[in-house]
Image (cartoon, rainbow, N blue to C red; front, side, top):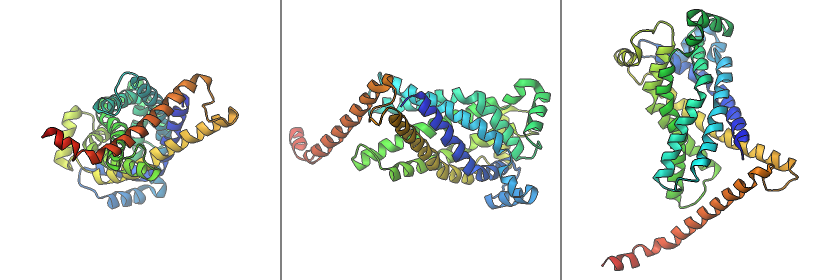
Length: 325
């Protein structure tokens, strides 16, 4: 698997999962922007009353394009960087997990050139500030040129660096903990989806205050005071966890779809490449053959390690105790 496969898979997974979950995201955005507490059902009813059923997808088009490109960049950086660091970082310990979190942060920074303008336009279209994409682009450019498209850049970084570290890093940590608890080297597809759901709910709830501040800074009429002032206003008006329930549910559902589509896309592209190479089990690219067999050797070594652990467990209460006495 090379960077192109991972990047394309990231694009496909991001676009499809975000398209499915857009209505819930729209309700969450309205909850966060409201100066008074607003339930998820009330937010949905307000959107339907104001703009009809199509209002639940307001701003989805440009956002999906920008976010899909961001997903392509994210996985195109995260996976190759993890493989590079694996040469230097010991596997199976805290160092490997820390490396996952660091590479996730770096991967997000690579996406900001497309994510921030898309997030800004999506937020304002959700809230009805512009009539469409063309109106949004011309209005933003008239406000402050190219720099206006990066309004709230710092707030997006404050939210999405921790978010991406949890999204990718916590997903890896949850899977590692599950493998250790279950005593097996690999999880089933259902177990990986459950790990993704747990990761999504935790990530959504923990990062909601940061997401709320980002939403308010990007929406019209919230221009002064910066991040700290926005935190204080949000805490005073609706609380820092306004929309947290919708966000947690949104990501609990979205993450299994997102990671499931990513893994499915990677597997499909790998099979397609193998068929083009003549049906062999090895990667289509000769340059990737060594990497492919190294990864197979790592999986075999991990399986043997778990077998050894299971064999040694009964002796922990016997010989170990005697040696300590």
